[in-house]
Length: 509
Image (cartoon, rainbow, N blue to C red; front, side, top):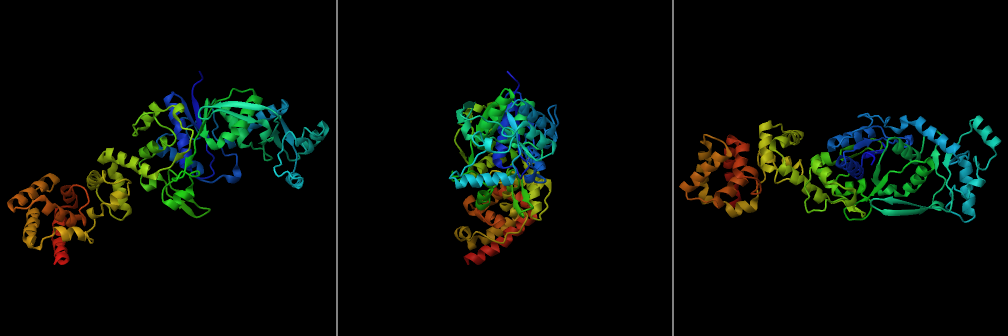
């Protein structure tokens, strides 16, 4: 059996869509599951659609996600170059082989000539003109012209493209791991251009040549490429090459299950469809990615792995290594996968809860710093520990924890009216004084001081804790009350208690 070699082959025409990232992930997982090689190839032959910065975005997204390629433009490898724009001679050589074998031919038709032919076909009632076996005889190409005419056109450097010669009336069948047996008719395929007038190959030719020369064993890609596979199969056969195993992945669908997941739908509904932020300079648009929205890369990877695949068990939390151990092509679904942002947030919450506080602390620091609040690492670590079971996204550490760094100005009035008893004000003043005298300001010692005070003053937790919570954070919702007090600090906590009592008296009185 040949070694497993798979490739992710994006075009640098814009940001890497989350569907493309899933394709890259499945290639990576299959390679790791079979001790194979994961290759990144940049398919940049369409120079008109090339977007500066797109290639770097692709490599940065893969690196952030945790599965950089074994071979590629930056990693190197013995099958390079890994940018198609740097492999022109290889394509030209194979085109010449196909020409020599009669599998391809020169076509000298100008754009005007092609347009005129389309117009005449429409007038005759044929609105789907195709350059194929039925029409090539009436066009200007090396199959309809004499050898001398062709030679003269080539010597005079007349512009031309090279087309693939496809004979009509044939049925071609191939196997796909997800789609099983796929059959097509050659009558449905025109004589596709292999080499453009600028000397660059089309996607189809470059794709097949590169997969062969790079010894790709399995082609794992989105189902939108399934119709192109018919042409690719014919190219493999015309070249006398062994075909790789084809695996066409199901589409990622919008949250309502209708239509392919789009960046517009994400923008409209407020969820990311890219791994990292993308700035579209031409359109003056910015799209935040999973990273900027507040996802951990491990959570995002776990989420997208299950969009079209499952391990066959009820378990849902898998590290990248565990995914590789469980991954098989046979468990890929053949129906579209609905993108569920709530499920993505659930995954992120699971990873936040499981993460060490020390890992989350720098992320918490960054969120507070972006809001203009610099906090020391020790405080960020404590906040991470208190809030990580209560948040879904990283920015929520700040939005749910502003009270750790800012005075409370908005209090939960319903709780105050229910719990605050003006006649107990004197005892609560005593509690503030008692805490002001505490010798050890840690959650453990604060709790003991409060418990001792309640016992001495015949007060219960239900009377005291809601008042402490609202005074410190403005609400009864939140993490451990004594942990909150520790992080807010002794002096500020006592000040908030006393300020809160005055507000409570005003509300209830």
